[in-house]
Image (cartoon, rainbow, N blue to C red; front, side, top):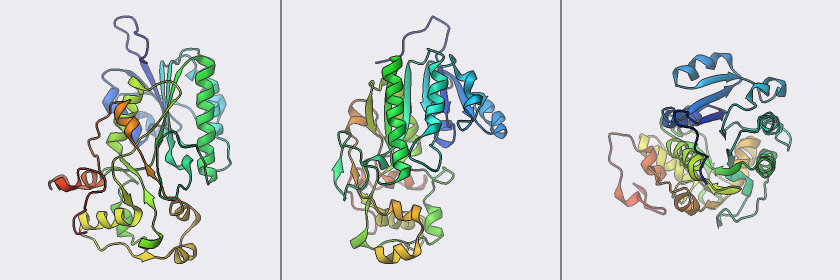
Length: 317
């Protein structure tokens, strides 16, 4: 399904909600083709968004009364904003959808969720047919948001696509450069206790968002991850090798329970391997960074061809 063709000379309007790092990457890809609106709650970001090519809108998802002007503005919505940090209900998404509902214009919604909705799968490989089993309130809020967005689609006829996203990284991503964690000497689990993790480069995620806006099927879920098949500790060992740093210390799960906070422990308590075939076949996305080795490699260094697929042998292993 694609968006209805508009009269000649009129560009379609996209509203990006949560225009942070990934949203800005999407903006760069689409600003010449779409009229892009970007919702922000920070007055300091208005000029930044305007200079990047968006029409900035000031509004706060925690203040529904500030969202009234969104009604009837956009043909499509890319919802990248996270839920609030507590509870099991995503009231932010509810406030956004209520505002959009009054406009009767939105024909497509792409919602950025998380692979955390699957919960702990004990290292099993899974695809989008796997039932959700959230193990944390953080993931339960995402499950709630997915349900709200789907109901919006059924009620309005808008084509709703859900992207389930794992860990996002890039060398130029603030807060998403794994080198920083290695420099801090943050520990990882011992091999026998380690968990499988999944990743997507920020540029590939932005391209997946664009593909979903163009080709996402109604009420369809897409896992947005690369081909890497790697445990968390091995991932950070790879980062250390590429950066010329000492590998992170390994600790047992029992030690982790004593040393780490609840958030860190939650990420170390779920193990899953995500299948991305639907991303490639239905959204027709060809990953620029099929593995984390290719995404983390310094630009001046060639990528080892042995790492072109999942399960490759990493340098020094």
